[in-house]
Length: 86
Ligand SMILES: [Zn+2]
Image 1: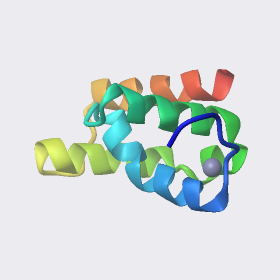
Image 2: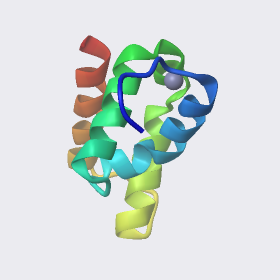
Image 3: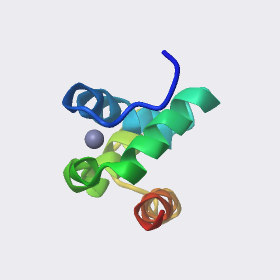
Image 4: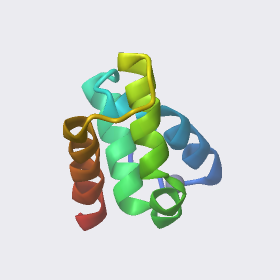
């Protein structure tokens, strides 16, 4: 796919399912950029994106439990606030 596309409903679904990979740096740069720019342009996604849930999902994936270390938690929160500002 090429060119700039406006956010659409099906894009939102994709973004929300992949945003955890994005936060966990599992996506390549192009995919990460796509998600980042979608979230920056799409308020509904930011609203639906549950930060607490994202932190839990990341922690359970990398540490095997659902207690979020403060460091990871603040790292995720920082990334979200960066998105919200732009
Ligand atoms: Zn969206």
